[in-house]
Length: 410
Image (cartoon, rainbow, N blue to C red; front, side, top):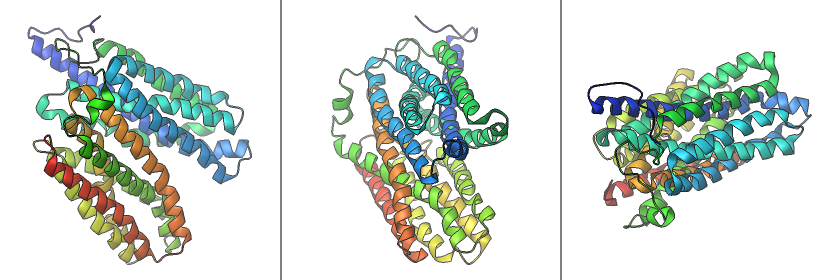
């Protein structure tokens, strides 16, 4: 059954364009919910730990469970979306995420909460590659990469808005109410996703549905194996460094003598730089291959990371300027990775490609903070610590550059 037309127009083209814009908006809202969900748990973790008398370090297992579920969901549901239809799998992902996020409110201990966060992570993890493929399918061919890139602005915006909303409501409704609210907000996307997506795999009405009976083998067909491996490796390395900086920069600044309240702003400035970076890079990649601009961005970032380590004590203003630039270059590049996958992989396996890349990237987001803790505990000089952090960034830049030179689509 086809979707109900959203506008009445004398020209069928104008109706299709309006419908496509609304579908891309829904994709943006899904990314926004993912960002909200990520920061929501960070805010309520202290309340849960206090109620259950959990040592602070033990809550890391709850975070890890959610990340693990998202990694598995990204790959498995992404591949299933290319095989069985993106509309169907998007609806399933929203239901899983919404229902099980709300169910977290009735957890009676850490083990049950870990299980529910793992299962809800499957849903949100699977929704992201699916909406990436949907946004690409409904964008104009010459604006496809830009549409996916800007769609992912929803993630940091959702994180910022979610943090503010959670902080305001926590004292009133408690952590259980926050979970219920998060689940309800997610399920509100369900009627929108049913109305604006075409039942025929979520492709624009009037076009032949694009599906793959063998999404995994098609992913690496036609000489794409080296590029697929390098794309996944680059995503892993970028997220490893991103989450290392997000997790440890405030601590390092505090250990270096900065006021703790001011140092806490570092993570905010880093993410604001990322938002500006995504928007700025979307203009750069609008009419060209995205690989070389992202490779250049990562290369410059690899130079600035050790500069930050050498000179962060010189001036507070200079340190925050460097942090903003690192966010612009690194996180801006990170949030463009789904757009790179959309550019690199053919239409019938875009969700599989984005899902695989994001699943590997989630592993980097888990390894990064742990690796950072090991390096900080080793009492290295700050210059040495940040010099080591630059090495994965250089490797990611080289990988992006290689794909840009050798890929038929790059």
